Image (cartoon, rainbow, N blue to C red; front, side):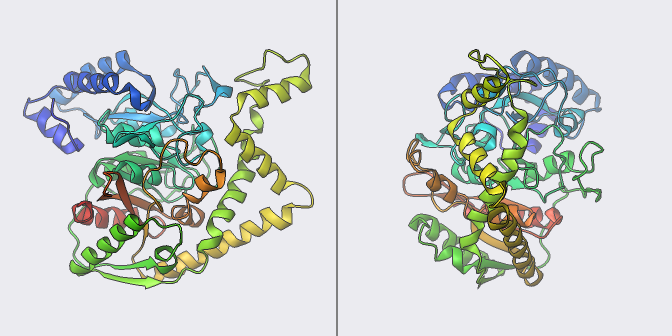
Length: 476
């Protein structure tokens, strides 16, 4: 069966009776089986997906189906789905079955999406390469010797390899956008608070956001429309009304876009990424958009600020995994103290333990003011400077990642290498604003590249409209 790049094309084929939903699901299941070497899925819900396809096909025929009827979607393994396993790709939650569903899952199912499986990710969403997963790394479909990006690597590769139409990932500091860039697909991080975090296994609670990964901006907009909105189970979810993001219209006026000169002059920026970025600037200007350089002035502080804050939050959030309440308990435990020590030592991977230790350190007496409190002040400066730029411009433009996908194992000896992969994505996370990564062609080796656009707080509609209108412009 020929692949489909968008839900609208699937819906058209279903309407014209060129396709049935059970056939579509069977095709995706076949592709998942065929491409097991990618290691994108940790579990495939074959029987459930096939049963749901039969039910929803009848709804489509009767004209009673929801907005997402025809969409086959995967969910990252840190998103809870009632009566299904969820492990955050960690040994400490191996075989844990969730007693409830995340709000985003309930909203997908209410609109007749079919959830086909759970997707591999970095352990507890901590990583930029999907190599910290207890179950092993995800491989890039463009070159299986390369990483998928992280932490939503399985989610990005599943869309890249056409194993399902779309996926939901989570973005703490770029974990939707960076793998989307490495895999040549669309990745959207909404404004903090736009989407409920209820039922998401926490990494850093003041940063985590659920976001869609898709082949088109059109589908990302529709998914955001479905999953966004207030939620009585999440006090951080905004009460702002949810616009009809999927009603994308042609641009009536040209946009004013800032790009950060600090980013373009960054020493770690790959030459081909820089060339693609400059090419995108030229194409936008040729279309009549105003694209100007601005100095951000704080780029060198974004990565350390982000990691101090997120590691501190991680040390707090992951304290609940103690070998007593639920999850892995070391068989070598002999009393309460050894239960705590052995269960956490054996249950967590190296990267998670590193972040817990560093987070505990920056929160400890004598170091709190020097590190955590200072990082909070710098976060405010980053947010204020970002907002200041966005008062003068419609969007901020950045490379999504400083390099294309690197080789598996390349950065394993030096965690700082992986941390610096987030240099261009964490600004939006620290500022709490929406950002989207769009495909920007490939490098000479055939590896995908991405361009990122940052928008104003809660103005995803403008960001999506602009992105849809320039989507094809950036791809070649």
